[in-house]
Image (tube, rainbow, N blue to C red; front, top):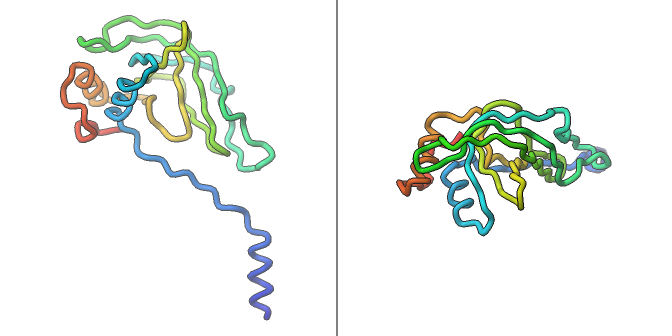
Length: 164
């Protein structure tokens, strides 16, 4: 009888176990998604500047959940992808759109990025969610090579990518 009471007490005070499972980001899948989308995307590489204090904070307290989406003004200074590589100058304001799912929110840091930006009217949106993809902080030369190969119609299968 004592163990039944102990088990009931333990179950009554236990908090729900929250977890989020994400696939490893794959730049070839991101490229395929953007290419197949009815939306317009461009691929850029360069430096992202924004106020990191505006990023939503993770909080497992159910009463303090962040908004599902937070838009943060940002500046991107770099180049967009062409068939010749990242050679077209791209300097402009962008919107860093941070998505949250429950207590998990996307995020990034200021600095070098390779990203797929969605064009909405005259704005460019860099979207980061709780699961990584479409935005690569501190990209490697290999990621750059793979996405340039995709742009040029070369092998763009998941096996061609090393992810990050």
